[in-house]
Image (cartoon, rainbow over all chains, first blue to last red; front, side, top):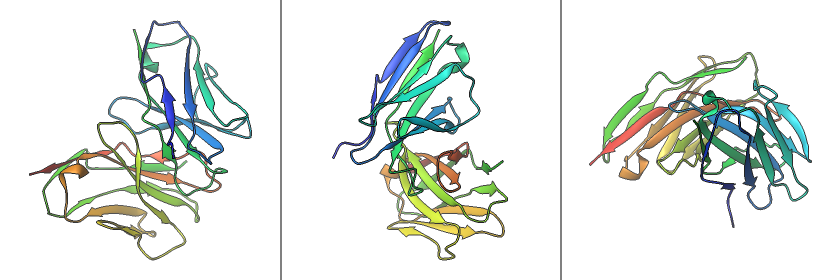
Length: 113
Length: 114
């Protein structure tokens, strides 16, 4: 049973560019949440997708956007990259936003230079 | 707004001994969920234990147990018989129903020494 899969593993982008990160949820899960984890800090909630809609959003600017596809996979897009966007981006999946705890992927390490 | 505080940036313990990681949180909610996650160097966050606020009984998962003090808003994690594989970052997290925004603390780096 595959867990949460994220791609790519590592990514280096230039300031001002745009980036797309991808996530496939655990089999049987239909809800995807995205988190940003800066170095030495705990993860911070970006947004959550359920039924192909953004259901909840954290305190992140509109440069951060997402999408969920009919197969429940999801993308995180970040426009106009800033140096401060350098972080580990974690995807977590669950079933119908239930509070059993999320299953996380291993993340995408984004470095903005 | 809910906040989670982990006051111990780093801790170490000898193999086979017991260690307790501290976590406090701030909320005005009465119904919520608390979690401990482990993040080894592989970066994947792994759920260690989960506690429902309306349950007074402390959750236990094998060598891992919690001391949940709702009135004090405290949620500590006890690891018994520590193993080298327990070396990791440990994050305390809070979530209110129906889910979504999970608030994490800054983490505690635990090192188990042989």
